Amino acid sequence: MMRAVVLVGGIGTRLRPLTYSVPKPMLPVGHVSIIERLITNLVGGGVTDVTLALGFKPEPFIEAFPDGTCAGAQLRYAVEPEPLDTAGAIRFAAEAVGIDDTFVVANGDVLTDLDISALVDFHRSHGAEATLHLIAVDDPSAFGVVALDDDGRVRRFVEKPAAGTEPSNLINAGTYVLEASVLGRIPTGRKVSIERSTFPAIVAEGLAYAYATDDYWIDTGMPDLYLAANLDLVSGRRSGQSCVGVHPAASVHPTALVERSVVAAGTCVANDARVVDSVVLAGATIGAGSCLSRSVVMGRIGAGATVHDSVIGADGAVADGEHIAHQRRPDPARP
Ligand code: GTP
Image 1 (cartoon, rainbow, N blue to C red):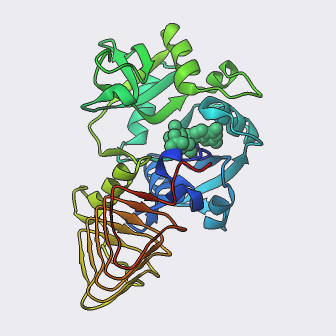
Image 2 (cartoon, rainbow, N blue to C red):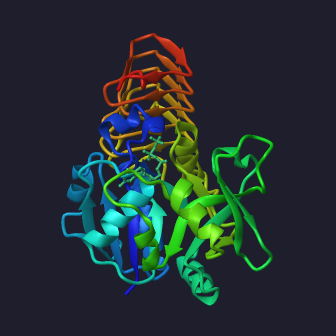
């Protein structure tokens, strides 16, 4: 048996207004929720039992898997009474289900083709207490940046370093293998960040290792990346994985044009609308003659409107004939 804890309790501030109605890992990428895609990859790498570390909006997760399984994994739920941040959430969830052996942790908003079994083998063969999956990126400053020794030991771990001071271009890609002993390092009853507190402490003792790969990897936590994750699937940019753009249960008028876009089941795209490089999510209606580009929509787009590079949440609307670009509706600044 291999167990995993998946962190899914965050508020998803950066993906507002979409996350006002749907918690980030429950949002679909190519018609399948992020969490289901993530768990499918974990199961492919030998994980048999997944505990969801829940906090913000736990109900949609529980309702989505009524038989308590996902992609063949047994699901368990741990709901925090208050947000404990990443390390606090890992300890809370692991103790709730009695984890006492090597286990996998994944951030619930990351999509990757990483071979989990290879990460676990690397962890075991190096005698690590914690092993991080790394990805090389062009601009690492927004991430946890890792400097490695030749044998894969982590020499430094710096969370979000100032631009220009990054020790490498390898970033924490949000999948870990941990020994149960890591749990004892995490103080209880308050917020603790694994990136800012726990990993630096393990690195200081020379017990953290990291494994860099060039697998497909995307953090879906921001609108442009959430859009990109969808477009990667529909445009066939992902080897071995793709999806149909227009779901068979969507209603798209024969005179509407849909290009390089994902249109969800139950949505309605009216006559002469153009939907290009966009994601139309459950609940959306796209008005006659409207034009949508590089946008994600859960709400209502009026007839003749043009919407470019915008995010329209479930309670958002664009009026008939209105032209907008680079907007989010409703305003994500609201609490
Ligand atoms: P932002 O608010 O946009 O930063 O998104 P987020 O809330 O998801 O935070 P972030 O992307 O930094 O979190 C990484 C992962 O940890 C995500 O999968 C979150 O769901 C999860 N997470 C963050 N904080 C908590 C927490 O306090 N409890 C639990 N259970 N999960 C958390």
